[in-house]
Length: 280
Image 1 (cartoon, rainbow, N blue to C red):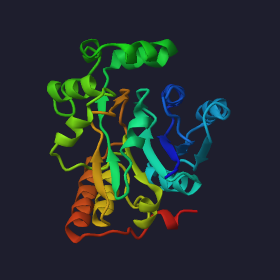
Image 2 (image 1 turned 180 degrees about the vertical axis):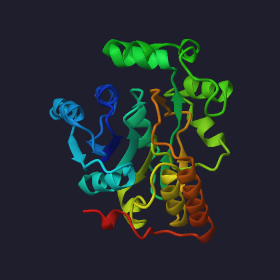
Image 3 (image 1 turned 135 degrees about the horizontal axis):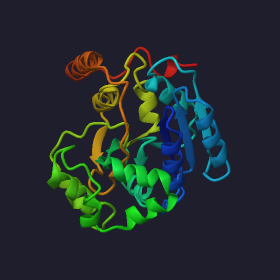
Image 4 (image 1 turned 90 degrees about the vertical axis):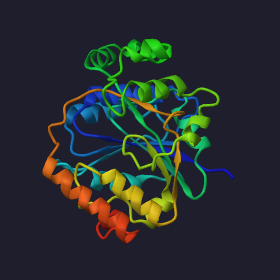
């Protein structure tokens, strides 16, 4: 079966990050057939970054909406409408993807499944170095696991041991064994997950009512309720998360979204009322 794969990169006013992430996507062993930047209202600097990549990445598309607060779900739905590939990988503008990232997602894209990756958080100093020097990306990715760990925030996402497993296994032959042995639930992650576009359309895409917090888990739960199961690539295809501030975090809103997510899971909801079909 011949099919196509695309990447949707969510962004908002982080042009230096976006430039670095898009540049690294040019180094994929299997290039995506379409790259879409889903822009939640960034300014001219981001537009200029996108213009610089128009002729450098396959099917490059910049989808923009005006800045009216955190509306990531809406711009992702608009990007989905602009997408013409069969399978879609979702990342953010701070997610640095190793060379085999697309290839591994593609090899795990099976009918009836969505792929679930993970991220490794980098420390501030490494992030600054990568953003300021294009060659630093290649130098960092070529480091061995032990050397890479000096740049990792080991207190996040499960601690040192879990971070080391991701760093050590990434892209290595046999890393799929760790993916299959993982016993976690497998939640959809906006910074590293993929799904068949037809399955995303079946659940009416992302829930436009949700802002920051559990908005990715919520669509993943609806995919599950529709019979689409998670397939782990958390060890074989993690990406590296460039550090940044999070001024948009609203703890009360996150708790509200957690309640919505739990209701979707408990009640078995498949389709959201305000989603893909409701965006212009």
